[in-house]
Image (cartoon, rainbow, N blue to C red):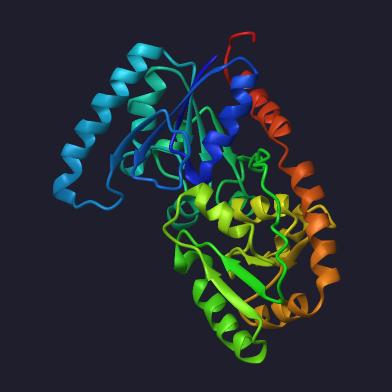
Length: 316
């Protein structure tokens, strides 16, 4: 099969493409905007994320021209659209993508949470969500956990008394960074060995290498489910703090190594980890097992392949 992934949010498309290529598929990734956290994108238009209404027509022309060139050259079977279409109301799904192949919409977060399903997304042949909280907005979708390939990086055990607590937000408001900063400001006063590592504006690999030096990591506070960051530090054997909504706890296989926090108890939960090295080690080991079982790259790719097969009339 020929598969075109559009957008590489949190490197989900790239991670999935690694296994799809092993399965014998021809896979390309197209990113629309400038994205310094993306890895190994085949084609990037590098358009600015923010633009005015007067730039819309020019933007439309650039994207359309490039898409037509790519599609006519490759003749894709599947268009895997991460966070749905490109243009307002996802109108490009029925007017463009559906003319050339089957369409899979794969929602990852704020676009669906903030705007709900659009007119254009109704025309997708299949719908996937990467986190279970999104089923509230698209109950007909299938939840498939993000695939997390082994990055080969482990926790760096330092020979000092410091406790480094890391946080790597892509969006401070969304990730609840203000709660992290407030908690760390208080903890540093009470525990002089505590250091704050706020990681921003780094490439994906640069961020991972900084996270290796941490003893504890905070993903998002207040959002309600964990992101790819949690899984990446789980692979390192580092405990991760993140808010999990009560109604979503049933979706987590326990023990997971995840420390469920809220804006109100973040300081308390971090202090427990600061004072108990054995707890940090235990949770780190639980996390390794969890991410390898739930976010297994091969397992996820097979589940998505099953969706492709169900919507495409060709025998693979």
